[in-house]
Image 1 (tube, one colour):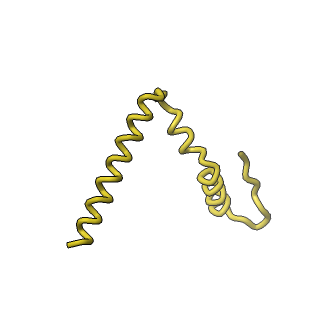
Image 2 (tube, rainbow, N blue to C red):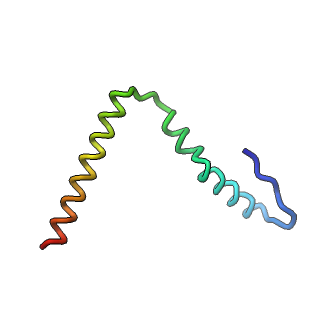
Length: 67
Protein backbone atom coordinates (compact mmCIF):
# COMPACT_ATOMS: atom_id res chain seq x y z
CA UNK A 1 0.00 0.00 0.00
CA UNK A 2 1.26 3.43 -0.79
CA UNK A 3 -0.09 6.93 -0.35
CA UNK A 4 1.32 9.69 -2.54
CA UNK A 5 1.80 13.22 -1.26
CA UNK A 6 -0.62 15.54 -3.06
CA UNK A 7 0.51 19.06 -4.03
CA UNK A 8 0.04 21.42 -1.09
CA UNK A 9 -0.77 18.59 1.34
CA UNK A 10 0.83 18.66 4.77
CA UNK A 11 2.63 15.71 6.34
CA UNK A 12 -0.11 15.44 8.99
CA UNK A 13 -2.83 15.20 6.32
CA UNK A 14 -0.82 12.56 4.47
CA UNK A 15 -0.40 10.54 7.65
CA UNK A 16 -4.11 10.86 8.45
CA UNK A 17 -5.01 9.66 4.95
CA UNK A 18 -2.59 6.73 5.30
CA UNK A 19 -4.15 5.70 8.62
CA UNK A 20 -7.62 5.82 7.08
CA UNK A 21 -6.45 3.56 4.25
CA UNK A 22 -4.95 1.10 6.72
CA UNK A 23 -8.21 0.98 8.70
CA UNK A 24 -10.30 0.70 5.54
CA UNK A 25 -8.23 -2.20 4.22
CA UNK A 26 -8.38 -3.95 7.64
CA UNK A 27 -4.65 -4.51 7.57
CA UNK A 28 -4.09 -4.28 11.34
CA UNK A 29 -7.12 -6.40 12.26
CA UNK A 30 -6.00 -9.10 9.83
CA UNK A 31 -2.50 -8.99 11.26
CA UNK A 32 -3.81 -9.29 14.82
CA UNK A 33 -5.99 -12.26 13.89
CA UNK A 34 -3.14 -14.10 12.19
CA UNK A 35 -0.59 -13.29 14.87
CA UNK A 36 -1.31 -16.55 16.68
CA UNK A 37 -2.70 -19.74 15.22
CA UNK A 38 -6.13 -20.68 16.55
CA UNK A 39 -7.52 -24.07 15.63
CA UNK A 40 -11.04 -24.39 14.23
CA UNK A 41 -12.34 -26.03 17.39
CA UNK A 42 -10.85 -23.24 19.51
CA UNK A 43 -12.35 -20.54 17.28
CA UNK A 44 -15.77 -22.25 17.49
CA UNK A 45 -15.48 -22.41 21.27
CA UNK A 46 -14.55 -18.72 21.45
CA UNK A 47 -17.43 -17.80 19.12
CA UNK A 48 -19.84 -19.74 21.33
CA UNK A 49 -18.53 -17.91 24.41
CA UNK A 50 -18.91 -14.54 22.67
CA UNK A 51 -22.48 -15.39 21.64
CA UNK A 52 -23.38 -16.45 25.20
CA UNK A 53 -21.88 -13.25 26.62
CA UNK A 54 -23.78 -11.15 24.08
CA UNK A 55 -27.06 -12.96 24.84
CA UNK A 56 -26.52 -12.46 28.57
CA UNK A 57 -25.92 -8.72 28.08
CA UNK A 58 -29.00 -8.45 25.88
CA UNK A 59 -31.13 -10.25 28.47
CA UNK A 60 -29.89 -7.97 31.25
CA UNK A 61 -30.60 -4.89 29.14
CA UNK A 62 -34.16 -6.08 28.51
CA UNK A 63 -34.65 -6.78 32.22
CA UNK A 64 -33.46 -3.26 33.09
CA UNK A 65 -35.81 -1.70 30.53
CA UNK A 66 -38.82 -3.63 31.87
CA UNK A 67 -38.43 -2.48 35.46
